[in-house]
Length: 248
Image (cartoon, rainbow, N blue to C red; front, side, top):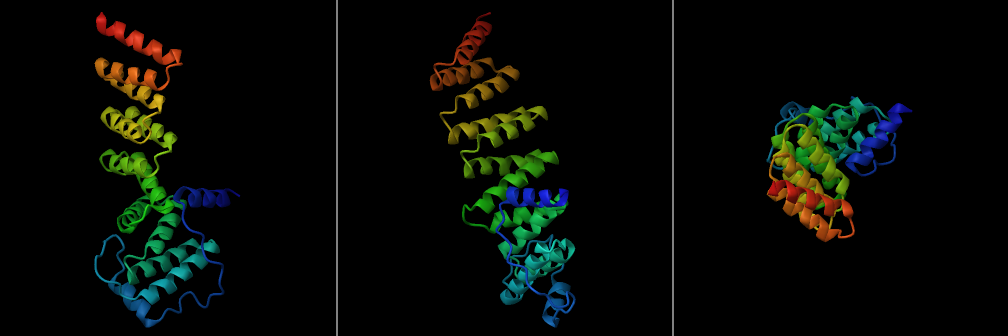
């Protein structure tokens, strides 16, 4: 049951498309000579190749086999087939996406991250899969404390998913707790740009500015919070207390 729940979590987090129905496979090792040549020449998937597709038909064939093995929870075999598909077509977005999904599920995050980055690079539509890949890669980089990398993905994730206020608080709190207050401020400013009526964003931004000793800037944010939610005594009291601190 634990393995099944992890699969569901991975599929939901990455928003990958459903796999094809299970097919009857022949021998997993009965690959034709073209497939063998492809793998000998282009086995290193860590290198992003910009060249043309080698064999689109072969890539799709390997992709379908990967889907079938994945449905059967034979993940190592699925990985092998997805790698072959990507070797045959370096821009096969679905194969890249599904391979990243498996690595994520297996908690092989260092292998998932470059694939997510590749998928983000080649996906030119604002799909649910792109949004999920952007958010997931930002989260993984934050977990690795690669904050200079994660902030870029996080800011793009906010822009792509502007109604997801919870992810904004998670991002900002992670940065602030790690001593990266400037990045937390960036996150809240990005949140405000897509949700300008969210009074709690202004309050949260003001709290970090106050923590950093930037009281005048904090007061300005608290005042906007009152404007957005004039019925909140909490925000009114924040303005009053901050103003008194500046006067003393």
